[in-house]
Length: 149
Image 1 (cartoon, rainbow, N blue to C red):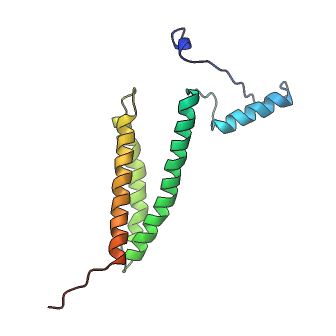
Image 2 (cartoon, rainbow, N blue to C red; image 1 turned 60 degrees about the vertical axis):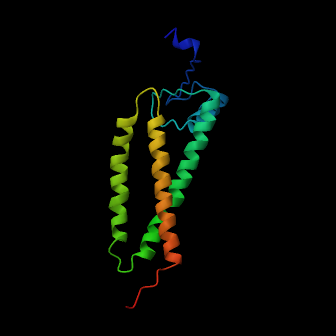
Image 3 (cartoon, helix red, strand yellow; image 1 turned 135 degrees about the vertical axis):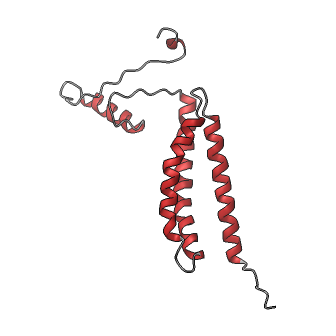
């Protein structure tokens, strides 16, 4: 514990259920901290430094934006390309399979010291997915003319 104290600042934030012993200022400060760091369960251990926290938060926001915009777009593209409606229904299990397999693969790749392999996998899969969707969209815009021979 003493060794960790050289590199980290330990902060204890008390968020009791009974707030009658706290001033309004402390209650407001605690609510703000719980909201800022997304604390929902107690106790919570949170490790961060000032520079990496902001960068990580921006990265999470951009990832959520890409996923939130990309998933409905992908399903809409599948629905438009699927003329007989047989494949669009597979979008739901495909998303479910990704949600089930993803954490297992990430857990396997995470070394405990670095998340570099997990982040590399995330970047590569997002690039491949965007490339495949871009190709399908481009092909939809310029359909191939079938030969009549």
